[in-house]
Image (cartoon, rainbow, N blue to C red; front, side, top):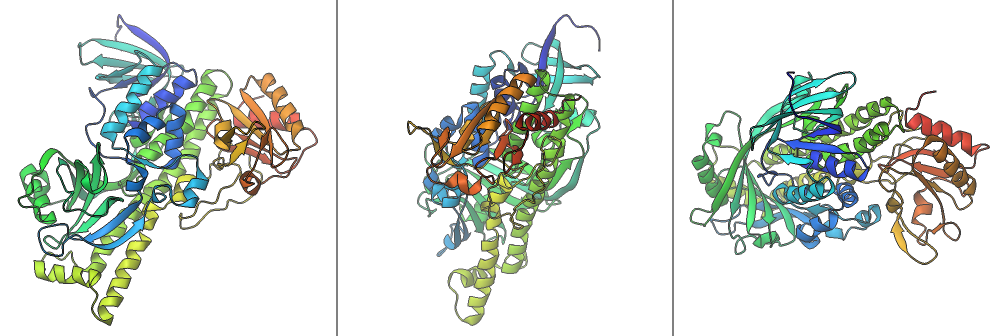
Amino acid sequence: MSREPTLERVPVLIIGGGGAGLTASMLLAQLGIKALLVNAADSTSRLPKAHVLNQRAMEIMNDCGVAEAIYAIGTPPAQLGHTAFYAGFAGHEGAGRTIFKQESWGGGGLDDEWRMASPLLSSNLPQIRLEPVMRGRAEELSPGRVRFHHEVIEIESGDEKVTARVRDHGSGREYLVEADYVLACDGGRTVGRRLGIALQGSRDLTRTVSCYVSTDFSTIANDPDVLLRWVWSPFTGKMVVMAPMGPTRWGSDSEEWVIHLGYAMDDERALDDSAVESDLREALGLAGHPITFHLITRWTIGGLVADRFRVGRVLIAGDAAHRHPPTGALGLTSAIHDVHNVCWKLASVLQGRAGDALLDTYEAERRPVDARNVARSLENSKGYASMTKLMGVGDPTLTFDERWATLTRLVDPDGTDDSDFRRRVLEMMAAQSQEFREHDVEYGYQYDSSAVVSDGSEPSVDPEFRCFIPSTRPGSPLPHAWIEDWDLNRISTLDLVTPGTFVIIAGEDGDDWCRAAREVATELGVAMTAVTVGHARGDWRDPRLRWHRVRGIETTGVVLVRPDRCVAYRSSTAVSDPVATLRFVLRAVLSIEG
């Protein structure tokens, strides 16, 4: 690179200001790491695409200090508790009747499994409103270091540093940034390609066109508790997906909507805005209904995972590392989980508390989880194709009357044959609950790397990804349980973990572990807190015995939790030398040589 008059030096350069990049900026700031974020676009997303935030993602948003703001403007819990399938929407008598309805994402907080899994509920807020909240908080934490309309136009990665040339599109000025590490959250548009990172998997299976509109469906749509509507059109034989976008009302009387239409890859109508508007009106039976079209976008269904998540001093996250169909809402949430995994590791290395090899555990831990999430998203998406085939409404040669007769069999079964047909379809729709009840996908992951010290136990997982089985097995996320101090102040076990801090949670007779933790933390310069928890004894009480049921240790045992709330080590009982044990464990987890 040629010499430039302006040079900035930062520990971490974040490229990309979407969900992953903004989360990374907030987390690194709270970890005491000075990071610079640059984003080529002049604003946050103009597309209201990703919107569902699962409980794990909301825990991270809470760490960042934006959870309450998200809840304040997001979908009320009572209006995101269900999803439903419909026979048509409007335009003829009988349209809009419900075929099948089921709970989704914890039923808006009614499902006990969700309430036991986390102190925070799932939420729903489209990116056009989520990202400004995140950007505002990132700018508050890192004033002057969150720069939109600043684009990386060159990047060189060396053994000691990464150098990027950045163009300020507002002024036309170019400047250089030197960083110890780069976190590329740019969707794979720039950095990954230049470093030879390949995205592998299925591409361009089908095309989807998304229409962001303002309209009033309050006199047409029913079920105010439904978030996602899956409508089979008797006019076209295709499925139409409808999602309310608020901003002040949700459910059936939302002011804004995103409506998704499916097209074959070779269908040129998908490329013509006027044709798409006509197709939307036809499919939903809305010929004369007032609709304002704000934006029409096209994208293809596919599932991709990067072959590497790290090249030297550059790490990738979010869409740069994996791309999903939207089914299951696993794209944005996986991106948020990525940076939560990597940011504490970057901070530990930069602060001299860990070896550089700790950063290799990011790929080792997240790539298998992200690959599983991509596979689940694809399976969810393919489920709808199978459903349409079973229903027999997708044949383009069928007439409206023939399609409506088929849909009528689902809402007004008449005779044994109709009842059997309806049962088969409803069973397939019920099986699609894996998309809306994938608690084990969200929480049941198991990290396996040198940053986890195995205790030899086998994971307890649900092979169908439906039921989350909380555990303190090393590599698992720390389970939530309500605990109290002796003044009756109640917190979640998750709240024991603060930014950049390891936590020892010992049994009520585990004081030796706590003393050892303090000694080893001082010796290694590691931030660590240590507490004992028991039902009737300890620093914290377990009043509901929830922690007792999931902790997996005896009264003298211990659980060591990493700063990302992953269990790093577990001993079911006391050991002869807890100082030596913890020293060994922490050196292994942090890749400290010698």
